[in-house]
Structures are given as C-alpha cells and as structure tokens.
Length: 330
Image 1 (cartoon, one colour):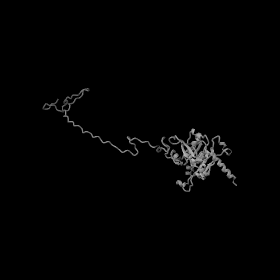
Image 2: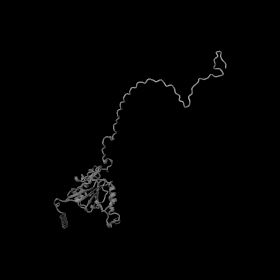
Image 3: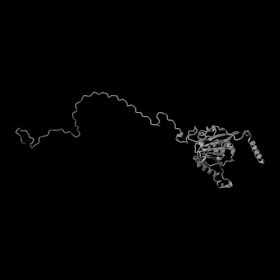
C-alpha cells in the first residue's frame, strides 16, 4: 500500500476504501422507520346544517290523471258506438226515426225506430194494427227530399213491402199520411210459378234474396217483410249484416212463437191487441235494461166516427151490405 506523505490512504490506491456498513434487514424482518413527530390536533368545527332542497313539481300533462284524484270511468260510446251501460239505454250514435208515440220513443234506443239494424215485430196473427203502429214513421220517411235537407230534385225514397199477408187499402193509408204511390210490394213465387224447387232448401228463398239485395242497394226509405215461420239463425244474421248497409229502419213480422228462439235482431217487440184502436207493445229485447211492463198505445183511427163503436161482426155485415148495394146499382 502506498502512503501519502501524510500517511493517509488516497482514493487512487490499489485497495478500495471500505464502504460504510449498512444494515440490511432480513427477508421476513420489517423495516421500521422513525415515526413522524405528532402534530397538534386541529380543532374540529361542526359542518353547517344542510338545507333540504325544495321538492320539484311539474304540471300534469293534458289528459293525464292525477295519482291522488279518483279516476272517472269513460263513457262506453267514446270507446265504440256499439257499447253501452247495462242499466242505460244504448242510444250512443244510433240514428233513428221517431215512431210518433212519445211513450214508445222514450223506451227505444236512440228515441225511435233505429236505422241500420233489424226490428222484429212478433204477432199472434196479422192485421192487429201493426201498419198503423208504423204509419207515422213511414209517412215521415216518404216525405219529399227537400223536407230532409237533401237535393230538391230527388222525390224521396220508397218503402218496400215483401209478401204482405193481405192487400193494402190506399184510402186507409192516405188517412194515415202514407202516400201509397211510393210503396213497392214484392210477392214471392208460389207453387206453379217456379219456386217449388227451392222449398226443400228454404221457404220463400226468392223473397229473402230480394230483401237482402234491396237492403244493400241503399235506395230504400224502409223495408217491411212478413217472413216465413221457423227461419234459421244464419238467415237472420245475413239480414242483419245487410241491414247495417241500409240507412233506414227494417221491420220483420214474425210469428209469436219466435220469441222462444234466439235472433240476431237487436230490437224485438211483441204486439197484442188491447182493445179498440189500442195495441199492447212489450219490449222483449233492446240495447238496455229489460222493460217489465208492456206499453199501451192508442193507434190512429181509420174508421169513420159512427163506425168506431161497432163490433167486428157488425163492421163485416155493414161492408157486405155496402158491396151488395153497389152491385145492385145500374
């Protein structure tokens, strides 16, 4: 080892200077450093109380229901015109022609004879005043078109009668205000006239076909049909579908026993004689609650005042006497 004059080791000596001893911790020995001197704890001040934010309110959208307000039920006719409450008459959007009898109009849906649907009149026998019951409505339907606000060049629509059981009396119809010139009578083909091959399929098939086609034409004011007994349900459904295209009332005259069988007609009435010029009308089916008691309607008279108090037998004898006296005249 070389020594400097001061006998001190130099950094350029051949032997390096010994490094300072450094304590190396063992693998599992943790290194602990001197903890920092404790700092004085700062005085804690309570945080200011938070003010609750105001509740956000928004105006309800138009038509929205409030969660607290009780919801009111919607009117059924606003959902569909064929809906109604069971305890109310299903007037809705039904178009009707006034019957001419205030007591009857008050019980009919729409306030009169409804359009675009079948109306069944069940009779024990024809000729008890059914035409006098319908005469005010028929007279209104046969009025000139100008009275209904339509084109003045159109003289109004006609009324068709299918297979009436007897001939019509023009004099009596004129007294009731019905213009017989606007009536069209349709008779079915019977026996030798060519309809025998249809009888095994359906009675009066030609009349039913003519009635259905007439309803679909759109040129009728009203239709009156005396149907054969024991019609099948599918025939009535076809007629009801055809009536929906007809802007007017449709009257079907059927036997009284038909009340025990279902029908597609929305309106069914049972008619019974209740005295001179008086008719009992019982509503069997309508769009609304059932009617417990029958209505008694005073029919418009067609006889002269001196003949109204006579019995049917006396009227028949008077009619025969009148025919014989006219035949004896030169």
